[in-house]
Amino acid sequence: MPRVRTFDPTGRHVHTASSLGASVDYGHDGQGRLQEMSSGEWSAKWLRDSVGLEAERHLTGGVHVTTRRDRFGRETYKSVGARNVEQFRRRYTWNMGNIAESMYAYSRQNARLRACNLRQTETAPCPCRSCLPLKGRSQFVDNVFCFCLLVSIKWRNFEGDF
Image 1 (tube, rainbow, N blue to C red):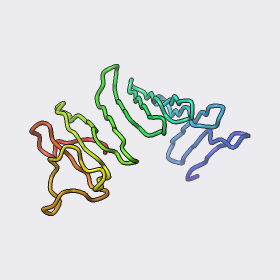
Image 2 (cartoon, one colour):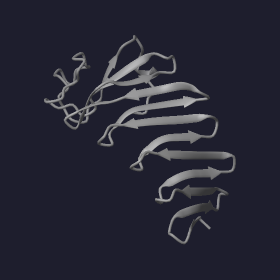
Image 3 (cartoon, rainbow, N blue to C red):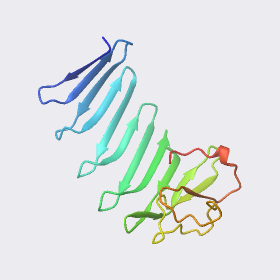
Image 4 (cartoon, one colour):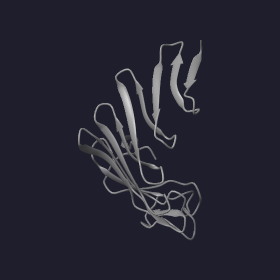
């Protein structure tokens, strides 16, 4: 028995069991969207906004994730905390379909790091203007991460999920 999935009469995935002993239960809201998962003592619950996008996530151990979006559904803020203490925060500013600026993260040493425009173009360059060079030229290239360190910290200490 590699993996067995169980569905309710409406076709919603409600349970998964595996030959390795995993047993996961799933709960859905009235719209069929995933609302909760549990396996033994572990659980996760999702709260959604009026259009069904994730607004909050609560995990076992007091971990919570809060997400805010603009009127177009684009993420503008995400906060991750544990036991009522914020551990990580990101803010996004959008400009003409591109992330324009202000993406913040914190290292394990609570050093603040800032990552600018994730998809830089000539019409939406990095707002900080002090990015690391890319082959001796500015980073007006798609799919390039621009990390601007606001404190002196070595790259190997950076831990984010960008």
